[in-house]
Length: 310
Image (cartoon, rainbow, N blue to C red; front, side, top):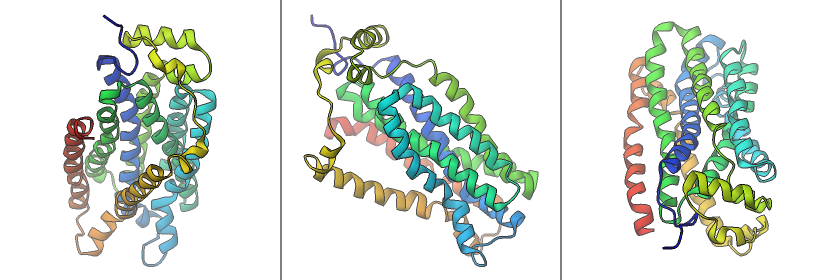
């Protein structure tokens, strides 16, 4: 009987642990990007800004992390290709921890916007690196399911954000939002420690001609050989816009539509609740938590179907 390869190996405990650690980064991202939508209602009271009187400042409080994400996705993605997945898989969350904690300690609006923009670099880095490391270790037949599993954690983070927002309300305006932001940094600490125990991506090692190290990791962690992975030819980034132009455009449009809903509308959901007359902060926090279960169930359903139906 032929030994399994990276692509034909059975789904193992290692695959689930790796995908969970990648997903925990997405959870932390989902938590922080969701928690700010509610926290801005308290931040606006402390720093005397509002959507009507200071629309630009209000918008930057909500969206400054997105500016950093755009930078982080490009720069850290390239660094992950040069320095390794594992290295950047850890550094991106360290970046997040530092600036998420500083955001919670901000003394004025300028500091808050600046620290959240810098924190966003870590968030933007984690998305592509997490998805890449899952796909590079996953068996071909379960690759889609594991990617859906990792992304599903975004909505687990949204659910957690709603719960934390609700539980911290009793701390008062000045302390509540700071504790909520700080929780995101605290959540990331054990994830960083656990990620440090994970091996380097086998496929990245192959690209760097470190075949023996790649073979050892594949055998010890997955019980598989390298198979054809050792003979793969690295692709150039330019091919995304030539050979693979159609799927690239499809994915860009799809992600754009998702981001408009998840971020564009998601950031302002709590503000809209208040504008439409819901003045109870506890109700707004719970509404935020209740927005998450349906997407979680949807992703679970996709996990079960994506590799079967395409």
